[in-house]
Image (cartoon, rainbow, N blue to C red; front, side, top):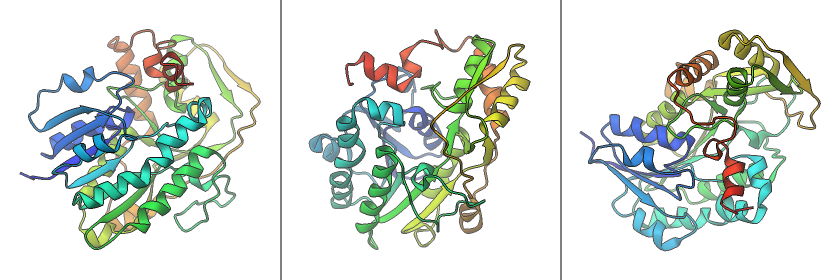
Length: 330
């Protein structure tokens, strides 16, 4: 049994909540740190002595110092996590997504943390015309959210050392079921609307976007933790599975949900279109996604069948920007 203790910053979020379970199943000691704006009941209900649930703000240096005690590994997921939420309060977004980052990295290094894994984003590439967007291509972030992700990558790598292993993952857009569900991500929201409105709206349609099942995202973090230092030190990896157009995603949703209503289209100014290539993490680390976008849609349909969600079209717990407004964070 491992004695490693992993601190998940953002442990109450969409990915973080699921990652907690994956790490516990791997016999890691887990410390989940979050503001828990969306609640923490789903973690409090876990009966496992290897789990600590801590409420705190990553901008609070004293809370971070305490959370880092006796920690071997940090997985940094915490952020204002989509562009509309970020635009609601840019100063809040900057303070969480950028200003707090280097102090956390320094504190982790000073605390004797051995490995630091940062969740960046595939959005750092911006608009690309290349058929395969690999880690070697230049970063051309278009929004403050993605610009700060790119800046944090530089900050983290500048602190790497033989004793402090730094690894960066650039995930595709995540989809599927979590104990802290989100319905403001493309696959998830289209499935929600198909089931509960019997119609879906696609903004644009031809844009290509990378997608990744949440189970594979969690597997990727676990996989990184289990790698020899030499394979992951100062490394950056794309993590994606399927590059699909928004129209293709909509067609999958319509077929799997058996939606009888229409697929409507609206014009959009968001014409980002790119295909992320994730072959490097497979070639160097042997990581391959096991789940598909179809699986994610089926999982959400099954969760609705179990009446798993309460008021899924309007409940702010499923929508980042709605919750931020509700908490007067705008």
